[in-house]
Amino acid sequence: MISDRKLEHLLICKHYDVQYKNKKTGFNDIELIHKALPEISKEDIDISTNVFGKKLESPLLITAITGGHPSALEVNKELAIAAENEKIGLGLGSQRAAIENPNLVDTYKVARDNAPNTILIGNIGAPQIIGASDKSEDFAKKAVDMIDADILAIHLNALQESIQPEGDVDANGYVSAIENITNSVDFPIMVKETGTGIAAEEGKILESAGVDFIDVAGAGGTSWAGVETYRDDDRYIGELFWDWGIPTAVSTVEIVNSVNVPIISSGGVRSGLDAAKAIALGADSVGIALPILKNAFIGHSEIINFIKRFNDSLKIAMFLVGAKNLKELKNSNLIIKGETKDWLEERDFNTKIYSRRN
Image 1: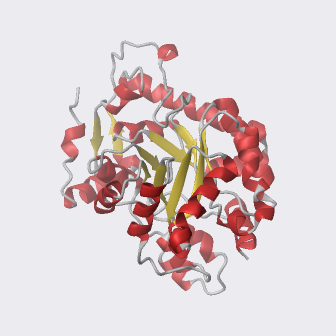
Image 2: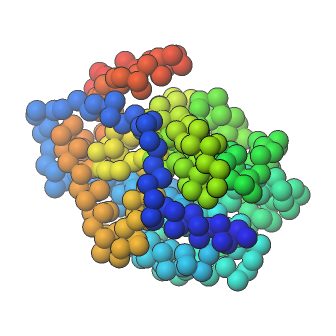
């Protein structure tokens, strides 16, 4: 059952190390250029953003990881309360389970019940909107109505589908299905990966298909091949593809320099310093899932403490580069080095454009 699978995913993320083993996000290869004369006060730094149509006090989003099992209700409640209190956005896990089984609707609806004002991002999978065929518009609307979502995310998870025993490995029609949704609904559509990144070529295709936002969700954080490995008695394939994907920093640069829609950088973002690097690379917001989920299992205060530490470390990074707001951070100088530079240069991206921007 889908619901049982969702519970397994939660428990595996809670109890096991499911992060990438050898492949990193690439943020260690990004060096922000220190300003010895920042000429600003840290107390005046503004990290608020209006990129999603509502004012958020931070560019941090809690990205999709939970839902679809009664045990997820309490977790989503805690995440929603934290998101509302700290005025950040919240994305939920795939809503397929509740669309197919209305008894599970409360595990998602609890988010809007406890976060009436902040941004909520609904979630359906590309395989499901293909499977729904001519009913894909209805499928999307049900997901949005279920939680009164501000945005609907369509997630891409070809790697995870390839590893899990129940996986759907027929990806024919993804693009046309996404385009059909964007042309037939009146709410914003985000397309997000699930930890293996999006390359420039696919970014351009998604922009042409009419999507409003792209979440690169690159490699280096949670490996869903790793998660699925723990569910399979034969771990050979999962172990083989554990580190598959485009590093988050690489994917962020590729997409930022290829499309003209707002970009979320997620996948292994673990601190405000990582966030500062992602935004300096051109992202509009950043997403975090696994660390906040693990804190949710501990308690509400741990989620709040994580968010506050995150925001403070972002402000410190901005202070050290002399950026009073996110717009100025986007124009700060940085160096791209190491494997990230090698990857980007091999793909014909000019890494020097970041080093002397102001």
